[in-house]
Amino acid sequence: MTNCNRCIIKELNSLNKLSTDELQDISDKKATISFKKGDTIFEEGTKLKGVFCLRNGKCKVTKLAPNGNEQIVRFIQKGEMIGHRSILSDTAAHLTVTALEDMEACYIPKSIINKSFIENKDFSFDITRSICTDLDNANLSIANLAQKTVKERLADSLLFFLKTFGTDADGFLNIKLSREEIANSIGTATESSIRILSQFKKENLIEVKGKRIKIIDKNTLEHISIGY
Image (cartoon, rainbow, N blue to C red; front, side, top):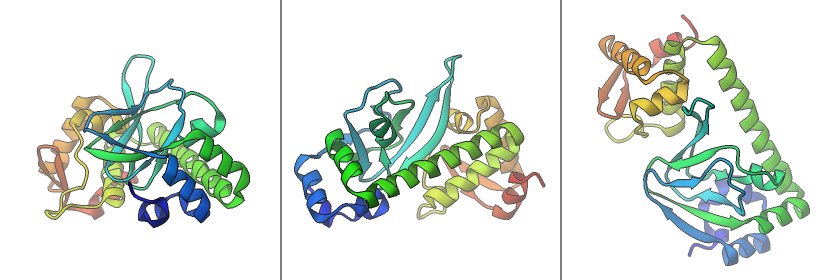
């Protein structure tokens, strides 16, 4: 099992504010869990007993609407922590987290996170700042849903995927999503996302091969995303 003091993943989140002794305590008590693509890390309504630090892979974070539809709230990837908001607020999870590919995560018990939050001001400040950033991004997503057209939101999401996940060796986005998942990420029907993706393809803005998408004309997508 990797020692947290020697793990480079901690540099990507608030764990880098912990002392050597605190990180050693995590190393002694954490568990490394493997997940398959499609596995649920935790479900909405679950009372969490620890947080997860993603060693690799990607996840989608979803909220179940009253009509039963799934809304993708955000995506998370290697290095991010999940579950800390519920732990610190001592409430049940408000969202469901699902693996988008085979991945591993380190499970850190709640007691260690709470102890460090109380005793280490640098850690508590950094993790609070991280939560505030998440809330700012959530507010922006809500505004986009209310103010942008479906076409603008789809262009915006493709650019977000490019910025966040980058591309593979062939130039395709380094994340594979079904048409339904793309639709759920922008708050529209699957048929609408399929139609607009086809339009973007015909206009030579993107290349599509199954679930793989390549951005061809980034500038035009940027103009579309802001309504021009």
